[in-house]
Length: 376
Image (tube, rainbow, N blue to C red; front, side, top):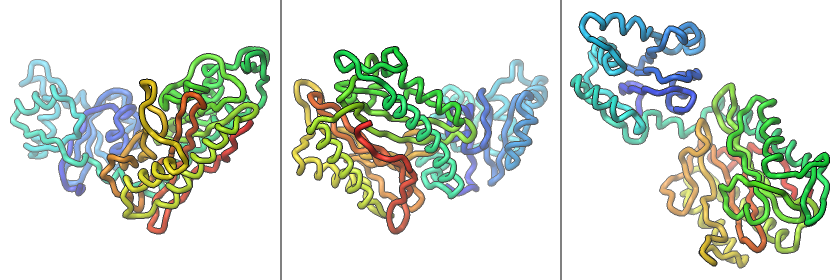
């Protein structure tokens, strides 16, 4: 999308990644952003104006209060739609492109003002898919926060004692998924990140890839630690997964772990600019099957490798491109993606390993520095 196309976003930048990308400023309440002839404008409450003028210098900052005051003589109760109509008409705009998540009710109100509202196919900022060097640094910084949390979690497991029924204790109290998650999340907060829904899942729980984990953790069985914090400063995400065993891993778990690790290496080897994402996934899946690890439903639940190999990472935890069997994406230089194959069999447990890589013309560069060790 060229910068000359006129776009409108109405959202808060705490939760809307397009808005944060547009202004580079965290604002907790919805506000107006529009781009006209390549120039950016934001309409904000007076509470935010001084901060915006300091931190969003590429935007012209307008006062929402002043806009409302201008309208009072001709509009009984001027709201968002009336203000947007006024500022767009001042720019002689009668047609505007919006993101797919633009509020439907607001779009209807704008159409009542005879403004043509069109959803932009491919997104209002398609360039977000390709990360600049400064964005890669921000992702790497968030990834370091994830690694700090993971290191604290693994250290806690190393310190934990093995009690009756293989249950772990930590400083004399039960070591649960909830307790270990808190240890990881607190470390991330201290490093400048925010963790949400960190996964600490052991045993059969780990066979559901998005199960957060609950209850007692046990020795001698795999525990999946999946950590994906957001930087409080930049809004970019890091993402890392390791699988560990406190104590001794069984032969079946060791073989599962080695197979997943080799599957990840195969994906690394396949990554290069212009490769089809689906081909990477197929290569990993095919390798797993040659090792005897079939994917399918057994006893009413899925087992094997039944999720994608990876996804884009940036201001959202899941962005384009997707690396999966159904993906139509082609990896290109500038993509930043996770590589996270996994195998899940309830009688054994689950194993998943995840790193973050950048895609270049000659291959992948791994941004993840954290070691891979099964037994702790």
